[in-house]
Image 1: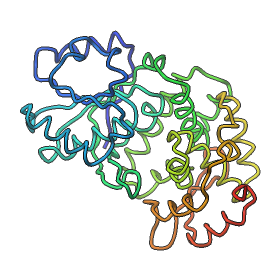
Image 2: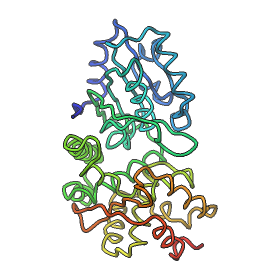
Image 3: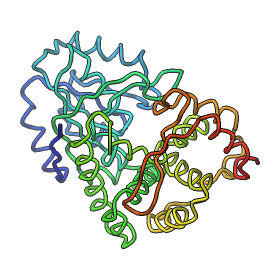
Length: 331
C-alpha cells in the first residue's frame, strides 16, 4: 500500500484545493495554520478546527469530531482533507479510518515532523491516559501534499522536533546521512526522508519487518516525551542518544554528534542535565506501556552503522536495571 506523494509550492496547492471550492469539502485543521490556508477554507462550515492538537488528540475530542461531521452530512463517498502537524494527522486519520467504517483522506502536513513522519505510513491514533497512540488503526491517506512553504510558519520548538526526527533518518539511510552532513536545504532532506519512509511502508505496511526500524530511538523517546512533556522529535533524538550511551555504542554517539551539529540542533536541549525535574521512576514506569513490548521483552532498534540497523529483544526488567545503574540517569 502506498500514498501518492506530491511536492508543490503553496500557490500550486491552493490551485489544486480550489477544485473543491464549490462542492462538499470536509476537513480537520490546526487552528494555528488557519491564516495560511485559502480564505474559502477559513470560512467553510465543514472544517473541524483543533485548538491544541496534541491536547485534543484524545477520545473525547474524537467523539466531538465524529458528531460534527455526521451532523454535517458526511457520507461514505466523502473525502477528508487534513491540515496540520503530526498530532493533527494522527487524530484526523483516525477519524477518517473509523467514521462510516472508513472514508478516504488526504494529508497536507504543515510541520517538518509531519512531512517526514506523521503524515506518511497510515498509522493513525489518539492518546489515552495510559499512553500515546494506544487507540488507533492503519489507514493510509490517498495523497500527501508536501509543501515546503509551510516551514516558514514553524516555531523554534517545532523546528527542533522536526530536526530530531530527521536525525533518526540519518542513521537509517546513507543517502540522507550524506545530505545532512553536506548541509543540503532542509526541503531537499525532507523530501528524501518522506520517500524513504514511503518505500519502507510500501513493503511492510503492518510493521512486521523493516518498518520496525523506523522506531529507532522511540522506546526511550516516548518515555522522555511523556515524562518531560517535550515535542516528539526532540524526545526521539534524546532516545537515540541515551540508548547509545546505555549500550556504550561509542561510534553511534560520535555519528549522533556529527548529525546534530550539521542540523544545527542545540544538543544541550537533548541532555538530561537540561531537565532538573526529570523523574526517573515515572520514566521507568512508562517503559512498561511501550507498544513494542512483547510479553516481558522490549524490541529495541539498535545501530551497527549508518544505513545498518537491526532489532533486538531485551528483557524489560534487565533493561530497566541497566538504566538504574547508568551514571547518566543518576543525577
